[in-house]
Amino acid sequence: MATFQEQLKTLTQLREGQRGKWDNITPEHAARLRVQNRFQSGLDIARYTARIMREDMAAYDGDTAKYTQSLGCWHGFIGQQKMISIKKHFGETKGRYLYLSGWMVAALRSEFGPLPDQSMHEKTSVPALIEELYTFLRQADSWELNHLFRDLEAAREAGDSARVAELEGQIDNHETHVVPIIADIDAGFGNAEATYLLAKKMIEAGACCLQIENQVSDEKQCGHQAGKVTVPHEDFIAKLNAVRYAFLELGVEDGVIVARTDSLGAGLTQKIAVSHAPGDLGDQYNAFLDGDEIASADDIANGDVVIKQDGKLVKVKRLASGLYQFKPDTGEDRVVLDCITSLQNGADLLWIETEKPHVGQIKGMVDRVREVCPDAKLVYNNSPSFNWTLNFRQQVFDAWEAEGRDVSAYDRADLMNAEYDATELGRQADEWTQNFQRDAAREAGIFHHLITLPTYHTAALSTDNLAKGYFGQEGMLAYVAGVQRREIREGIATVKHQDMAGSNIGDDHKEFFHGEAALKAGGKDNTMNQFG
Image 1 (tube, one colour):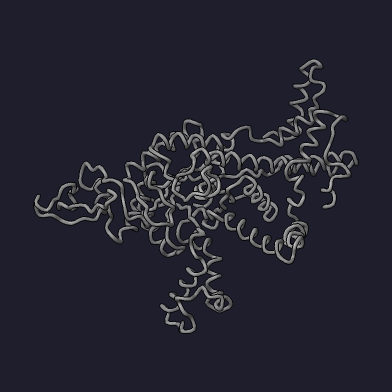
Image 2 (cartoon, helix red, strand yellow):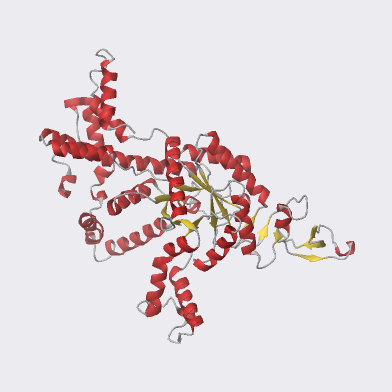
């Protein structure tokens, strides 16, 4: 990207070439606008962030400590504040992404109102949220750079050349808030053509990474609920192809596809796979179907479906819904086949939806996948649907019991009890929870850890705390002490909400456009000045 001085030189020459017609245009102001708006389109963003993600994947292959993380967002402001906070606390955004959850879109963004995670929300709401997130992230760039440019003007007026040089360096080396978004396309919202069309909209909005699952579109369920129905591999591969074609058509060659398998918790399929020869992919899928061996045609009733399985005729078990049932305890085997097949057919990363956060369970499946695909890497859902406290206390309890330690002081059925919070078991479980992402990245091939619904829960929790105090005895103090004073003490930029929403940027633009006649909002009577 051109430096501020390079932009200034280019625009000065451009103005001079207009023979006086652009004399009202100040090249420095135009250069500021260019620098503050680095990305001209969603495709610019998709190409830029795809390269970042590919570099991070390569770095992880060399060192598993370099795993990446993200938090789910349901509004542009939430995503913006996450990245501002990350830059504030860690100085850089490296390895930190955003996640767009279909669950949160359904629950919080649908015109139908709150919906379950069943792909019933408007498909256009997904690319709309991607565009919104990047609009807010780009505004964060403008906001931060605008402050730097204001400081630069002040340094020039003060004749402080060292400070001028320092600020120009900060401007030219500014790290954008724009980071990769892993976006949930659910099961594609229809057939492969529907998947392709929606993928294009999402990529045009800025998505460099799309996550698609192997469930049936019209029967799609949340990954942590019952009733999940998977599709044969040939159907899923067609949708992987559709997403890849969308990336290639739009010139995002580095686009990343995450193939999610829900097979661990899915006991049903909508249709029997097509098989052309014993041992082919369709035959492998059908081998997992549950059924009863038949001896003759007399064993077949009207409407029964019969397939050949391991050289035997089997009447497949079919439910009243018309769905077919898998054999019990085949989930992990189906996951491994799903993962290998996806990686061999265009997927870049895997997502294994599990019923609990357990490093050993994930590692067991990934090790089997890596026997065929050595560079297999995962995106993993650190889901709020898990009771993390209970799960890790149970894991510690079980580990101690297996070691022969005395666990008589603990009731495994009541480990959520607050009386265990300060115990050795409680502390050990918290330590395992703290180390889960590091351990799973090292042991189980997890490149990216995400929390799907964090701000759904934080918004509810903070609102509950404020409402309890404000409508109770604390009154206004609940807001002042619990929110505003903390914003001031902790340096949260939103305490100056006018500035965060773009008031200072707007004032500067008024000066660009109107000159001395500009009517600004940031004068001495602006109460934002009370915050220093």
